[in-house]
Length: 389
Image 1 (cartoon, helix red, strand yellow):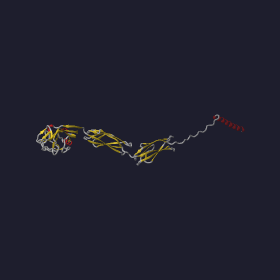
Image 2: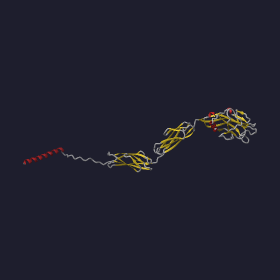
Image 3: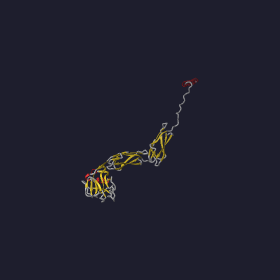
């Protein structure tokens, strides 16, 4: 009995010695058994960072809109959220891009974005926006090239305009007469079929109520020609109070026998029919003068220059009656040089007349003093400036 107990105790001792020997072999000499691993380190959370906060427009009209964008990230890689606030106006949209609708009142407004990472980290940034009045576009240049044109001709009209607010501008064209073709800031104006000065108008708008109007004028004039029309010889000359006709000279006054004389000039104007008369003048060249026929007491009184109509083929009767010309004095008191007959030529051309005829006569046929007092002309010409219709 005692022997079996002893054997059990000895076995236990031997077993313990074997275990101790194995442990000593595993650790090695001077080494401690490995320690239990530490839990992972726990550093502090870092807030998000904002790299930019921008607006499409920093100046906005009342109740206008601008897009705002925030670019942000989180150093820890956390997902970020955006919260928007402002001192005036309102927002539409969520996230990093929103639209700010401006206040109806002018002034400066702060837009603030708060970026959160959901773990207590936050960052803010603020952008100041202005609500301003809309400014009208400005025209810096409005040019017609050329500034003169023929009837039914054309001119290129160019307008240079900008908008102080940076808005896109639009052009609307009109003209007092004629037609405008084309769109944009450069158009073509086609002139009417008549002379005159015509206005071309441009309305520049910014699409937001701002407008500016500009004007440029173009003068339309047909190509002008000037011609000198000589007299019709067989219808030009002198008729005396005795009834004599002389086509070799033109004189007015009286002679020493108290015979009166009247001068006549006839011009063929048929070639002018159908044209637009611009100007017409009679040019007198004096050949000689006897005495002084102009005084009313000692002479024959003043000279009359009348328009008359005695037809074709020869000189008229001495007593033919004429009429005063529009631009000539009723009584001329000195030698005539150049007189304006534009109204008369215009009238006769429009009436399709083929003759323009003039008479020079003193108010008195003779003063009966037996002294020659007369004027003789070497030449009288009709100069006309006209344009084709």
